[in-house]
Length: 99
Image (tube, rainbow, N blue to C red; front, side, top):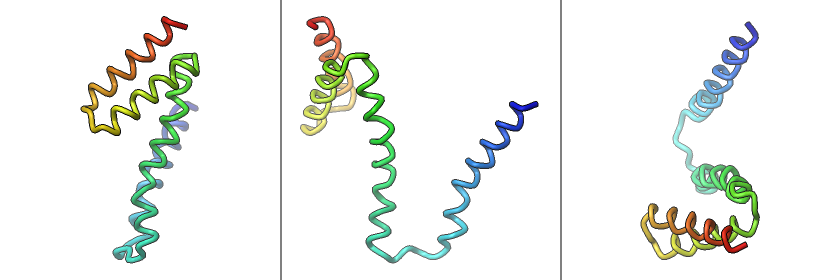
């Protein structure tokens, strides 16, 4: 029975998080500062969730750092996502084999 309560609470919380902005902001937001703040929230949350996972994924901080540097450099030069992912993974693997 307690698992049903847990699922119900999670559903209510998820619904409230999505519903509250619609009820609070009925008019268009005119403040440029607040609009830019809302624009960058998804990027900040994604970074906050992804960066720690990157550095704990391989179990070695050096291999994670090398993979991250390779990914950032290739992404800076507008390489396709598959190339960035494969090159970062390969560089982390090769660094792990060397170490």
